[in-house]
Image (cartoon, rainbow, N blue to C red; front, side):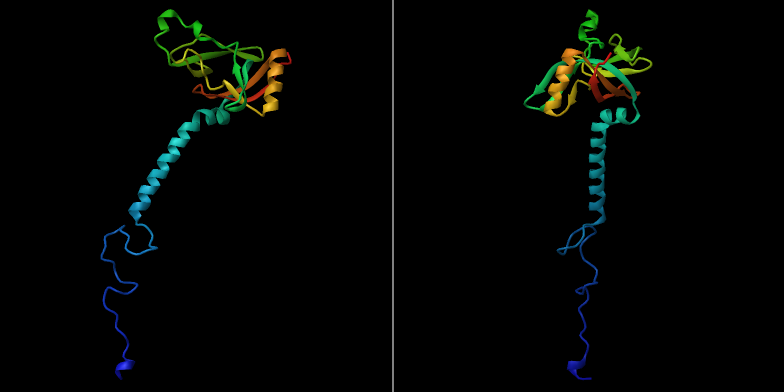
Length: 195
């Protein structure tokens, strides 16, 4: 064999299949995939973000999926806010207002529970409580001296918002609300009161 016919011998550690001298998860060549530790960290971060998003939407999602459907009488407060788009802000004449709280309870603002009682086709709210009542109830908050139960706004098209306002001023309206077993509520419909 002549020198030109001798097969070339690669130096150890320089070929494409040669072991790397860097540690696991370290990047040595362009285009190489990250190590397993990087994938684990990325997976944990994505899972944490998914859980945070789920916790944020759960109070609105839970009643829509597993809630009891009830009807509440509503009245208008403010039909359109130009800075937030078209919506109808609602008030509920059959739910208590914060003036129903005893004087001794005024320092205990925050989490509030409103027990619900059926009266014919609609439901009405009982006295505001600070502990979870038995039966169906709304989980609310009265920190800012207004009772907020998550059902104060109904978003619609701008022309529909004006029509709903007219209906509520003429004959009132009925909101179809779904309430889950933890008191979370979500509006699923709003129609004129035909009664």
